[in-house]
Image 1 (cartoon, rainbow over the protein chains, first blue to last red):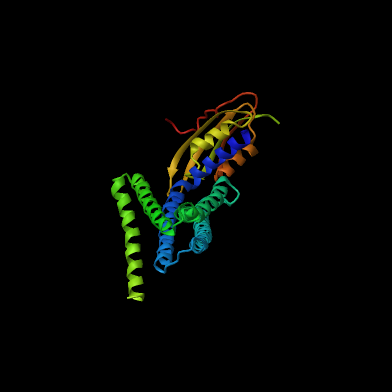
Image 2: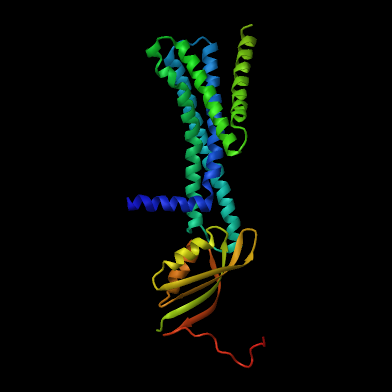
Length: 200
Length: 98
């Protein structure tokens, strides 16, 4: 218990030094949005291509989600560690001291790991949430219901995400949610247009 | 060797961790009774701090470790008081008036 408390205290200190919260929040919102929109694209692709087998949707959806997670994890790790290293080097030029083994250096390394995890897990969780109805298709027996409920979940997630961002920005939460939904609807319309172009 | 009672250090440190944390940590060191940190110069990323530590038995290495852990570097040791009691520097006719 004491050990856990000291770990939490250390994390709080790192948060104060490295300011993890703000950047993690930004990555979370950005990548959950990516996750939902991408999986929406996968769903629309499957729906318009007349895929009526839940396992096919689940496999294509999960494969896409996992790739997104790896991309997020890798990308955030590389960019964030480069940025943090640069910032640390910059600070070292002022203090003329090696800061890598100080609290500042450790906070920077912890920040990189936390941000990479958030960046990787956010799209994965978001897309899992949208794919959930396909795991339950056997309950209602008709995959079309799974498509509809996945669509409803995706649009609600987009709204929730927009509302979350609106709350951070202290703007109108409802309007911010609607702005996000607009992106989802745009993606849907474009998918339909593509289908009509391919199969006129 | 007599005990160190007061140290005044000129330290360059990043803005974060703040002097509140540094002062708190220094005050927890054994032998330390009081800590005073004041900032006398600010730069874009760093600040110059005058750190005064008083106590009945100060360990310079431990103090240095806390400062270093928080990203600071000691530029100079501006005052040291050692012995059984704290004395201020003696006044001499050579001191500037006023």
